[in-house]
Image (cartoon, rainbow, N blue to C red; front, side, top):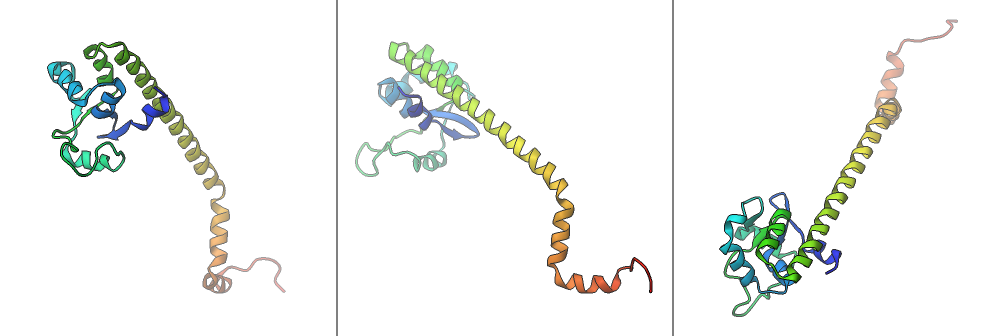
Length: 171
């Protein structure tokens, strides 16, 4: 499975990067129902920071981002809310789903999460450097900006000429 395909299925829910049960089931080549059964049989392996069930609102919000279920017809909607698996939950799935395909897919998924973490880290470093440059140059050009703003205010120019102290030689 391609890294890009996995990355496209990673969503952010409750501030965490997660993969949803139906996407995982498709990657593992099994039915969502079977994946959920395996998880429920081993629920003690999935604390809330490994896996959680989406609320109806979260699911509706995410549903606009994917097109897995058709809108009309019998059996087109899931009866139960989806499970969202964090990176740790997906690693735990490897101990629950023991097929060679599951192990192969788990390795690819972990690689996708590692890539995203590296990307996020480099992105935050770049943002910080840009903010530092902006602060540095804003301080250096503060006087220039003030002078330009002063010159742009015509009313201030007229009154300031009368009020300012004269310098130079008196004749």
